[in-house]
Image (cartoon, rainbow, N blue to C red; front, side, top):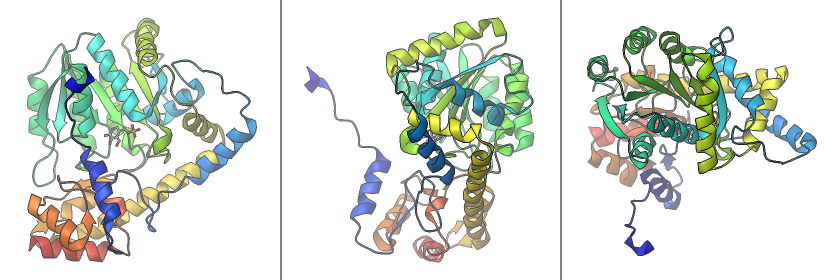
Length: 392
Ligand SMILES: Cc1ncc(COP(=O)(O)O)c(C=O)c1O
């Protein structure tokens, strides 16, 4: 019977990595992969994480099961960073659980939304493709609204229209910061407006915070999420530590539920536990335990924040160089300078994307999404010259 299954398309980004790997050119550039890279092109383990892992190996005395909620010390230690030191549990209205990465958290959040009787999720377009894939897999309808205008601003008109036409039974999935793939985030003033609109509507916010600290700073990147939570009775927050602690393959994330009445908290989160049990039973421990050890130790916390700061500064430097290049061939790179996080979209045509690969060995997604961390002070001129030549 298994032969009734149909062939699924290969993941486009994984296929791209393969193409890059077999390209023999020494000066090839990979701008496709979704991980941070240093100025030397590496994705190292954070020093703070290495130290925490060493401690874990030395001191951990059991690998016994922890339960579907995972490491609750990890879940709680993160809360002041996400929700604010002064209102870390919103007066007893927040409960969390550990998940396998941000993806596991999104899967649980959306499955919970489905269980609660929601049928439709509003998603800005373009978005991280897995948002739509998870909704489709769960049988949730997706309503797409335009996220950004061609000149690199958020499309607030589209968002206002989508919210005005939505109501009970609808949820909205918003990127908390460092929008993937556009790098175009809402300004603080726009978040203020969005929070007000959500507060006045019946639409349930699901906030995906996968890049906290990679944009403007840990506090700054949480502005929108905190504004929304100050206005709405209920929300779900999907969090990933895979980028801001560099733990990608260790799959470290958390789901937080926010309820209107603290008396409902145990009931609501029990649905997260039950869904986790039916999906992966319990999340992997190692990465989350390392994050907890970092956050329990003042010196390691300071080291982690410093390493994150260096990452952010490097991405800002690359963005500043691209933005300063301005009009390059037929494209304007100015907006890239003001965008946030790992990704930006450059409006290349399909032919230009191909020419960047074939003629210059520069690899990125067909959408024109580049990972700015793939650029270094050593290859950025090569990239700009290639852009100039293929878009002229
Ligand atoms: C917008 C967004 N959300 C969530 C995730 C999930 O990250 P992970 O499952 O690797 O923690 C990603 C990863 O690329 C992302 O870009």
